[in-house]
Amino acid sequence: MLDAVVVGAGPNGLTAAVELARRGLAVEVYEAAEGIGGGARTEELTLPGFRHDPCSAVHPLGVRSPAFTAMPLSRYGLEWVHPELPMAHPFPDGTAAVLSRLVGETAGSLGPRDAGAYRRLVAPFQGKWPTLAADFLRTQWDGLPRDPVTYARFGMVAAQPAALLTRRFHDEKARALFAGLAAHGIAPLTGFGTGGMALLFAIAAHEGGWPVPRGGSQSIADALAGYLRALGGTIHTGFEVKRLDDLPPARAYVFDTSPTAMARIAGLGKMFANYRYGPAVFKIDYALDGPVPWTAEPARKAGTVHIGPTYGEIKDALGAALHGDDPSVPFLITSQPTLMDRTRAPGGKHTFWVYGHVPNGWEGDATEVIERQLERFAPGFRDLVLARATAGPPQLAVRNANYVGGDIAIGSVAALRLVVRPRLARVPYATAHPAVFLCSSATPPGPGVHGMSGHHAAKAVWRSLRRVR
Image (cartoon, rainbow, N blue to C red; front, side, top):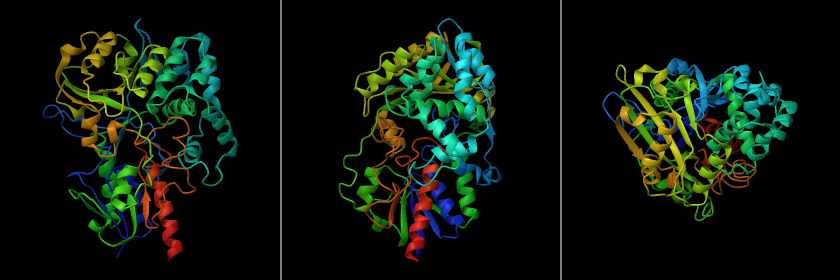
């Protein structure tokens, strides 16, 4: 009998499998798709030679994830590459706020009235990423924090809505920059904890950057898989699991799936019938004849570019998705990986990745409104398009079954749902079935390619198996 079977070969499933295999357990992974990766894959979506990331692309929480840094992933091919600037937030006048690895450069881009406020905001957390990440990328009630003072200071800010945090600033540049960072959570800017999401992304830029893996996000999954195989683990692809009986006997079953899929497969009835999924995104991958012609010079050097010139415009774009309205002036999150990774496109050509927010399950086409928004800040963008691959919520759900209705966060993060997910429980990775566990981003600490949900789920499995022994 196996010790553990993992269902789903995304970053969290592979991380959970590695953590268990490192403890000497016999582990096998079963993946429905023909290839591994889940939300960390790389494919030729447009034209031959253009390598795109269908889901995640930039990994500010991955490069210095406590789970990943504890593994020898570079030995298995993972190499992080950094842009000159982690992120730029351009404005219609041709200027831009930037998120740099240097606090001073970031503060200076916000203007003289807000530079000091930004420095004071991030100063208490500089140089403290290892303990800050370990303390917050977990279930918050699972033991005492490693650094109680920093934990308390960050927590007082992190609990604030982004709407309140941005009141520290006078000018639109700083307010828009922080609203854009908070919008990665796809929750109302007035919601609990959205300020913390923005601050964590800012600190991550200063401490580790916002890099991409050379060759694409697939490199993360491939490195985890290589390490797992070296530890004796086995991975099966093209194997769709419809019920537990499809799997070999094991002492524990760990699901890197949505909670509702896990409940259906494991026969847990209506355990997660009331689980709430959040808004979706509409994503476009481009093959381009040249780099994006941004008007703002800093955007031409940034790996990630946010498009939404004001706090109000970003708030309205999120609100439309949250309230079920069609997008009109979307807030855009974009990535231009070929600026620093020339392996992803033929010589002189580029790939470009963009998404805007839409309602869950939305079946419309946002291509026109997205490209109209891009043209505001990069006139002539359309002239560079060689090919595009579009994916609305239905297509995203086909690409990755965890993205129910196109929700890339695998569950709403509004209100307290970022902390209390998938339900209020002392051990959120455990279920009503003593041998069934959940390790996807539907569990703490939530969305992002950082492996921490898998890391903590593996610890819960290990503790359970030790008790049985």
